[in-house]
Image (cartoon, rainbow, N blue to C red; front, side, top):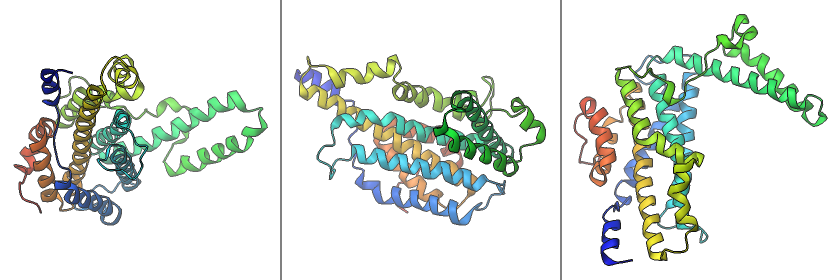
Length: 307
């Protein structure tokens, strides 16, 4: 690799010291989880049945994905077999956090109605899946217990989730819970629709390509896993670039999830979130753009002082 090529590649590197915000970020992250669990619904009126469990589930799952990703890309790891190539495994974990963010934004647009939709759509999925499994394995003794358990769950959950008799007879009466692309009509001008559309355009499509190993996703990763005609130095620099960029996107989306929850539930964590945003904003244009577009008008400038 020539000096000029190396300079061009390293120009895109994100140099940041996560130690600067590790404590404020992690204490903020844990505080949000604790408050959802213990102080729901905060200062909001979001009291829909099952709402707390749904939001807590989305949040705790996101924390788990974040922890797994941090383990894979940590500067120092107790596992000597961890490889730089593990940075290429970030997109599926990051996309899961993005899914939780998009679902959260959508749910709070009409909380009671959409929480109900989420549970009913989930019940429909279970029924449809059970029907498919019965068609394939009803005569297999190994499946007898599994299918019986599913039938029992379907009956029990129908009452819990408020499934009407008409809906039980005709599953098409229950709408499917939308994926981010279908949450809002293309022409919708609401702030939530604009936010979802932005997340799809700037993050969701690329992360999905990588997670689903589409042509574009494979094309981004395959050279770093298989090519032998490039130097190890070049590979290492490209992998470090992927690691740094992936980390920024991951922390940006997790912080956005925390911020959305704070705006809706008002637990008193806004100032702490603004400080973490201020540090991320100094590191990279991605978090700065997200904050400036969607949060600065509500929360004001990101605070430069730790809280």
